[in-house]
Image 1 (cartoon, rainbow, N blue to C red):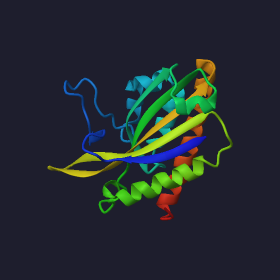
Image 2: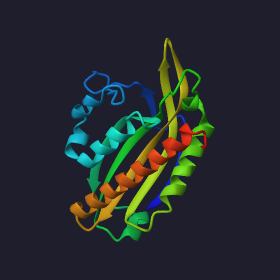
Image 3: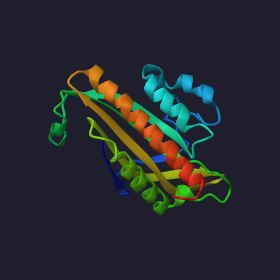
Length: 198
């Protein structure tokens, strides 16, 4: 797996308001951690059970993360940098991740260093995986958290995961493997964070 991370904190870069809702309220944040049954209303999780399993695990009590948004898509026009995969199609997704608040004193959501240390460790773990036609880009972005009656500026992480293949079925299979690898790494890092090792 090719894994890397970057930082996008500029005024024009993507950011997140949490909790979020579309202007018309038709789509909004679903608290999968507090109400696991809401996973039924995540259309991407229904169409792609691999993603549904990932969201279930990452929003469970054993995780120190929660997810805020996601999407899945396929493309046949690959960039020049993707030529190394010798593929004709890719299946990709993005998943927005936030740290949970383990207690009232937990300030990780507002610590850039906590996010940078985390993604650096995640990338290190995933780059140990033997070569397979998978790519992950972790991006640290700005998040505006609604805390009681104020908005606090903090951070969140967007993970872009791509599986490549000559056919969509092959790309999806590799993407599914990528989700399992990412899930295992996130579970391991959750345990390290709970033990204060990260």
